[in-house]
Image: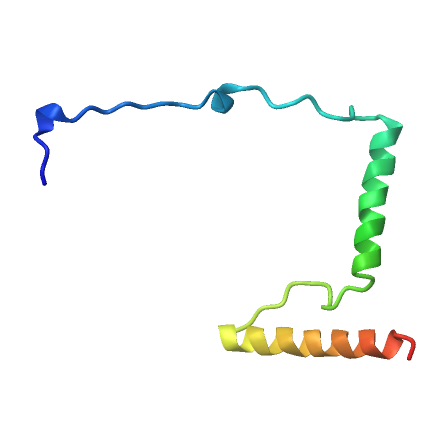
Length: 88
């Protein structure tokens, strides 16, 4: 069923949150607790992923398939190293 154009009404409601200011930063630059928080995040990341599983640098590939094969080889090597380092 079509509604005549004259009967259509357009109402735009913009939520108030769109115009609210962002909250103030929890820590100011230079605050020692900021450095401790950053160090804690880095330490958590280091514990969750202790080693990088790909070599450093830029790696170029001629095709997507070549890139995928290389990534799978790196992943396989990484998983073998993880399994070998776990206590049995």
